[in-house]
Image (cartoon, rainbow, N blue to C red; front, top):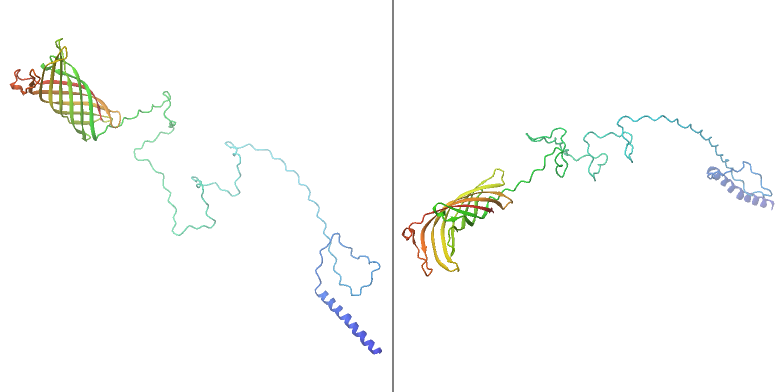
Length: 370
């Protein structure tokens, strides 16, 4: 009976002691991490708790005491205030920087002479960028030189302000007048004119100067020559007319009048001159004081002469000027009327009045040239 109790106690003791030893070895081999220190640190030897029952398990291994916080270093001594240096005067020519000016960073270098700012939107290539193979920068073009004989303004020349020259008295020349446009030298030509004519010689012994009206129509074949047709009417003005009669007479020419054109050296006008050859006619009507026709006659023939004038351009298509003309008219057929108003034409050499002398007529007229 005693042996059986001893065996039971040994078994119970083994069952209770061996696990505790194993746990203690494991705890010593892998101790748990130390908890973070607390402030203030706990006392090194805490007082035993009163009336604490004895532990049935072996005590846990003790942990090393937590280290205390090192004392803070003393604050640094205050620095002495800097001594103010006296301001130095700015060098001659120094200018204050504009508002918002920022000092360039250390190591900044001024750009070389002739440097130009890149255009807006230019992007700087990234660091280490290499141009493609075969790339060559554009060569720098030398400044263009003026052509030989080019007039250069003398040093100190003041360019006049835009908008014209100042009034006289400031040393400037007035603005030049606009140059007239050159006249037209090709295409259609029209020259209406009006003036008066004067008869010379025996034919003009009974005539005063009278009105004249005419026109030339044609075209310019070149700047120096034009071919035209001319139509002209002269109103005759008789000197000695009976008070009981009214004499109406006129002469008519239609023919060819070419012109030669010579341009002015300035290009704003031209001289014109040329011959003419025309068919000519004469008509006379006599009326009494009541307006009744009492007599009439006519003759037909030819005429020749020339025209000459000068014209100044007022626009690209029109010039204004004056002309002089000479016309010789020679009747070849005479046609008197009978009492019934019927004409009977016959050669001048066979007419009862004999040969009719030719007429010398000078004309002076103003004209427009288109």
